[in-house]
Length: 309
Image (cartoon, rainbow, N blue to C red; front, side, top):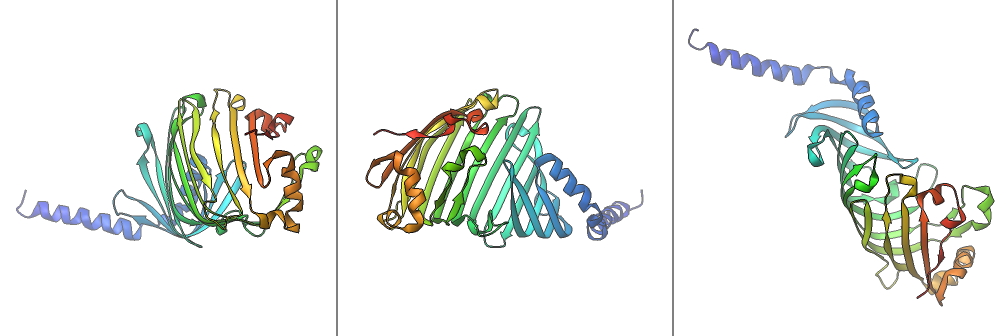
């Protein structure tokens, strides 16, 4: 081989790769990439443009992105300036991908990794300073205001939830519940409809841990500030079973409502609904001992009982 041939070959390879990254029509693959992401995670992406991201692990980036996240049987719509998708290894080295949603329209960043292998699903979530006003506002004013932070790492077994483990930590500042109507989906339970008045809560801190399918609430406290309209705690656990619908909830909610809300005309139906759960003036206690099936079937067992001190 002639002297200088190897450097020329290397230079050609580098030039070829740079040309590929710059001129490859990746936008033509948007539909395919979006379809694969939706099939693997249920996340729906729509963007103006797509480009290669070569910092760290190679991946693809998008600009001006609408992101629709599946939340149970509902959907959450977000708008972000940039979204980055990259291949990743999750818990137990399960193959999957990571998604970084940066510069949300009203503030906040979200990073998540999802991996799947057999019946195991690894899910990691880190949400920082997410403005809650952009959540759930599709059909009107948002139900919540405030700033949300979440860190969670879960390893779920979709064929047997009793083998799942992980943790879920969350906190909020300046949390407020906006006024809204609460109506049970079952017309037979229409008598339980009521209006929730606007409630200032302030700070909320929640820590949940799961081991061998037992999800324990190690801490869940809200409304520490003196001017909070709604303050209290949640305790208990959820025992997941192989048959998810047979999973049992054992939860207790204790809370106090400010005098301002008790005297408000807007809170009349709310306070009336809570009257049977009053433990002392302005203080209330509710408990649930039911299965997920009880809630999905709108069973009478899903109605909370009064929590005695």
